[in-house]
Image 1 (cartoon, rainbow over the protein chains, first blue to last red):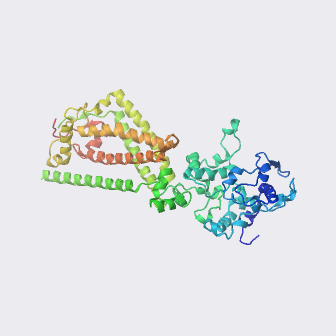
Image 2 (cartoon, one colour):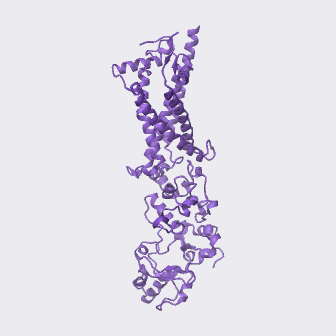
Image 3 (cartoon, rainbow over the protein chains, first blue to last red):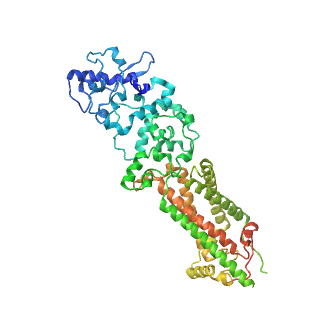
Length: 313
Length: 210
């Protein structure tokens, strides 16, 4: 482990060994880099029901890899064994393959193609996140990011889709799984925690959990904040210099500036955010009309006063 | 001195001043929300939001009461325009405001219980109470329940046309508010208009036209 790499992101979950199995078959086949997992691996790991029950926790661990999602992911050009290097030649695989240690930064450090994503900063901010400070090494990159489906370049025209994708990651763990009977109607712990937030469900659909649960510093994108440290000041976002401009709208604002030089175009097209969404022309017209009305009234009142005095004389 | 006229029933005066107080609260909280700025917290965002919501709902309820009261008590007739030479009569009233008042001319139209408004007032109030206020309330309710707003309008988010319409109408009504307050000073004396809306008695001007 390198000194500069946070320890927490170097320990994979056990389920992360799933594709390792696929890698063994690929090795045997000596296949070149593929656009999808090797067929030998998919034969078993393509089954959505493939999994086992962890003896320690009793939890069912899935060993399924969605081949379609993988084939369109950022890792599609990598063969299974590019990451999964343990001994998968035997079937059933040896128990030892469970201890395979995979780390994002093994591949993603010092890679010029990925320099713009500043993965060193990601690692450092992740190490400060509540996930790591509370759960330690048990929490890894793979708890949020599925290496078999990860696709940062996915075309997301609509901010709502970005929000949906991002929040789905959080809700995967933080949402109640009670979806039947009366339990489904009861407020979840998530609802209770956000009871102070006006229009909580609307917020959830239009901004990312991260927009409130990360610090202002863009470099701290993976420093997830605990509830007590998260943003609660409405005016942080509901203002012209909104925090959302450096968070949810960060990349889109840059795109729009380049393309049209008009920041509000982005915001207008997606959601109306009181205090943030402002039409400069309308605002100026309002002020001008207000000043004109007061001036007219003052002039009229002055003329009346003058006429009254004149009549009095 | 001319005899005072009983012009405003109690329910109308109560509506008027409640409506005025709510309108001021809505203007102040609305401007505070639209121009929200952490370095200049006029009214804290959360308080402004609650104030705007409560005052807005109360204003909407009062509007229903206003319409109901006018229907039941026949006040709606005050708003039914007499189209006979309407433009000419509006021009005469406009001419009085623009220069007649400076020459000491008499008000061109006399106030009576069956005709409280001059032609310009009548048309303005008709638009304000019949079009602008319902539009303001409807857009305000849609902003209060944004899930009821259309998802998308012309390829853009559905809430923002509603919000822009709400802001524009609110601003136009704020201009009306300024004009209304000023024109109220043009009665028999500067305060007689406001006094009449408190006591219910209209103090006639010293000279009148029709």
